Amino acid sequence: MQWKPEYSVGIEEIDRQHQGLIELINLLSRDEISTGLMARMFDELEAYTKEHFTTEERLLKTAGFDDLKAHRKEHKAFEQWLSAVRQTYGVGVTSPALLAQSVNAFLRDWLVNHILSSDMAYKDHVAANRSTYLGE
Image (tube, rainbow, N blue to C red; front, side, top):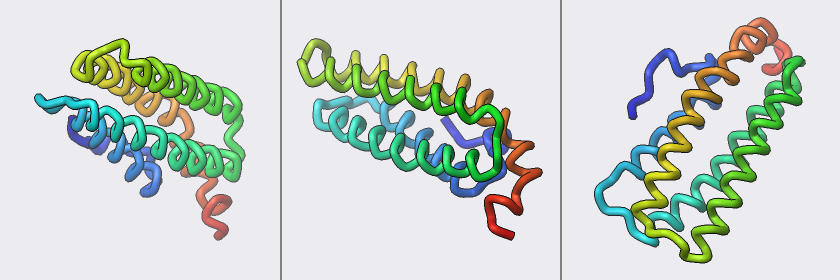
């Protein structure tokens, strides 16, 4: 996958974080998937969710975004999915390659359905309230 201008929510930090998710998706598309790569992927996804969701939720709260509660609910669902997949993988019930395919499919779906839909829903609101969250 490659970053496209239509993915931008108009906030440099959020766009940079979304670009990082695309890099993780591309990492999962490699031919060689190992147990070590999957462990690293889970660590990076966990770090991504902590940084990105905190940043985004703080921004939306500051900008007074009305749908913040629903947005947080989607973030929580992602965190629950990640925890469940990581626990399943920790038990060793699947091969790294099969797991990579499953995680890759989920992340691509997340990119389309969350970032390109839910995140775009706040784009205009945040732009209109830019002075609020920038402290201008």
